[in-house]
Image (cartoon, rainbow, N blue to C red; front, side):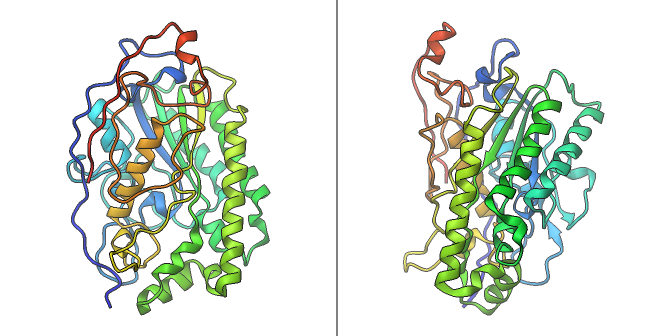
Length: 364
């Protein structure tokens, strides 16, 4: 039984109308997709897109940051579905996205503002945040004080997968490390929307067991799934704690004390299941040949779900991704990226803003 079925590039048609403010907004709570000038990302191998572009099993030593859901900008949206490629439909001048292929643990110029490093843990986020801010400040192509920035933070897989072996991965420690990074961005990066992704249920990766290559790679990359039902239930409960403490922190409002900065929690992975084939087995086309990291198809799925939750109010965001999910257009009634603040009832009325109707399009 093959562990992997090669997939073509996964893209999408896009027919959404333009959505850009008539003048550059001063408030992050009135930010439209076309207002985003700069995009960056913090994280681990999932954001670095480790092995996403390969179709054969061998000791992979490459990342494919151009395919990264959060930061990739290879080709166009027609063939590569990523958040930057969607944002580029609204602002072709978007800056900071990654392209091409990179040797693991290196930071070539083509990675731009994707500072994710394979193997990273939550404790590495502060260092990555400092690196990102420095790169943005030092880049002459970026007007650091005036450009609107969209930064994705996605971390926790390695903390969970090694949690049964390392006492430094408690939910309290996990949260403290991430809050350090968010506080740094809050203090040092003006005009910034931070897009924080809740961690997935890592123990579900055991459903990819079967082929020898999958068994050996998952055992190496995520040894904590090997302990049977009891161990996996403990891993599930720990993932729930990670999700809960991070969501509560972000939605508490502690990062919403400035009009030009916000942090928004996106829960679309919280209850997501591994996609399945008609016979009920795991659809490994969403994974790279190691059966753990996302393939280009998996990256596209993440980008789709993430995009859609950007336009769902806090408190009503989807906690799942469904294969074949539609790619939404921003509502013309409420064309802004939802934040903790503008999700409150009566926000538009308080700003004397009127509205119209919502649009949707289909995505493969």
